Length: 260
Ligand code: PEP
Image 1 (cartoon, rainbow, N blue to C red):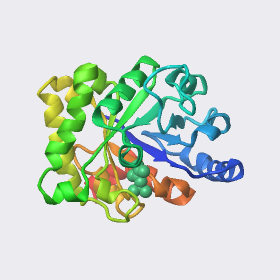
Image 2 (image 1 turned 90 degrees about the vertical axis):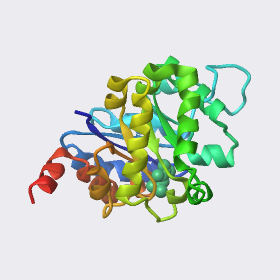
Image 3 (image 1 turned 120 degrees about the vertical axis):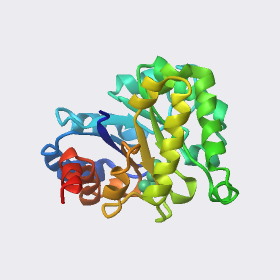
């Protein structure tokens, strides 16, 4: 059975004092939570601080991006080995903000995914369609193309060594969430696509949903068959809402949902 995971993407938010406050409030409460793997992805300058604050907590550290090569004359970029050295386990690749604001195409994202694997990181591959693409009925086609680029570069075993986050672009930071049925339909499509290459890999690969997940919609999303947790943006910046989302992912909550 796949374990539930919740990953907080802090985006370009935080500060030394604010990070400490957030984690001081969050970590003692998360310690009581069983059966959910939790990670947070602060901005690069705070990785060392957050790594120290997370020590012994069981909460993993992730970064929000990496470059396609390990080191060299690439001013402003960050290598996977550097992230590993700072204690990162995860790294986001292909977040829609990177794709749309910084022009990252599927091939660059695939290269970053491969680099993350080489560096010993677990890449969290973000895929998802825009509103226009959804309205034109292109959701599955877009998501498939994003996955195929990574499959061509890293193969099914490589893709399955990572995590996939389905994040419809129209739901990110908009307050508009995909319904559990809409999200499940795309997750089922992703698992079926992986299954065409390797059924065991398809069954084992964690598929997260992201896009305006909040305390009040997390349970219904996480109850879907192919949704293995969430990638959380805005709601990960506040201890109470992130905790409630992590609780919604805990197996105990799932049992309570099954036996009301
Ligand atoms: C994200 O940035 O990955 C995200 C899902 O953001 P939000 O939860 O704010 O929509």
